[in-house]
Image (cartoon, rainbow, N blue to C red):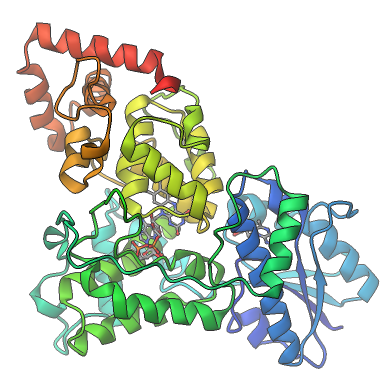
Length: 508
Ligand code: FAD
Ligand code: DLZ
């Protein structure tokens, strides 16, 4: 072949420049399932199944479209450990004149790619599947003291025209309708059943292979129901638009004991591996608003997650790596409590969020941020330990999006680049937004007694131990006034209780 075109497991998009600019008559495609990618973290088995099965389906679609595809299926005895090994050997044996790849999503692999020693020159094409290039983000961020998602988002709204009126104003007169999106869900409207795709023969085959070759990975495969083709991902999108989007805004921050997904889209894995494109997803949601089928608070809230947060964290990642990964501004040292890997804890909210994660490789944003994330923040877990957990257990997890969300949004380890205030909360918040506490053995209204909710004392311990760090933060002033106003005796009792909780953390 003239060129060998490498397609990675999260690049399953026919419109990639590397494919569009190539010629199926002269260029060949290379795809490979390899031990190094499967093993760089404890990937949930459903994530492995999703990626391998989606890769195999994509390879078959390319073949049908006339491409010659060299596909290396996972082989535990393979002589090739890494993508670099496969690319080198394939380029050599096929006599390729050049190798073409697309910018990859992780710093780790990007660095490795740049050091590959290949028999033919490597060219790396840009990834056109985002609204903004990294350069675009850097142009925006360069001269700003503070980087706030909201302002980057507004620029992208203007540039894309999404939810903008003809005279350049935000639809409805306001940029951000978040204040309308904090309702507790009390069962109405009922949450729709999740969208599931029954595994086909290819997926069944991959499930069996993952169980036998990578069976030590976290999670289970018997509940696998993710889409593995663009066609089914589009059906998942339609299902979301029809059954969830209208209430997405109202209940965006809600949690429910027996409804793990509520009105969330569950589209992140498809966006992240390229089965769906962010623009088509946002445009489809916008069309629902214009057709009068979904209210503005839902559609704006949804589009903000993709056009705002998703683009913002990607720009931030590529601008601040690799230093970002080492940030630990709160000086945390604690290892991750073991129950993160088992769900075996009496804290109801944690057991539910972790249990769902282990079963489905998914938890929605508020479970990640305000339950498992909040607990790790309050307990002072080392950022690397909690990052590694999030990178493993979620079907949508890739370093470029997981890292800023964990290191920045959850752990405040970056000192406030991503968020001006830590998302620290006591049990009161969880009780306000969910019905978990009603089913919990711990008492959310108690802070120091034997059955007190652990989040309560840990919250004040967190506030107390990081006073030096947060004392200049105007958004934290009221919290410190509240803490100081509680009196010496009460504060000592709260701190003593938190010490006891931390000492017995694995038994909570
Ligand atoms: P919805 O709530 O329905 O949102 C719609 C879409 O918006 C998502 O599909 C996603 O593409 C995007 N989105 C929403 N919130 C964010 C966000 N904060 N950052 C970037 N995109 C966002 N998302 C990932 O895609 N991969 C990750 O590895 C990941 N790790 C996370 C780790 C932590 C600690 C936290 C707090 C959040 C993380 N997120 C991650 C963001 C968010 O939780 C998920 O995108 C979301 O839960 C996916 O489910 P959904 O499709 O139902 O999302
Ligand atoms: C996540 C992942 C996994 C588990 N396996 C593979 C693989 O075997 N082959 C491959 O090409 N890609 C895989 N991926 C996705 C890559 O790790 C991904 O390209 C990087 O995470 C960069 O975003």
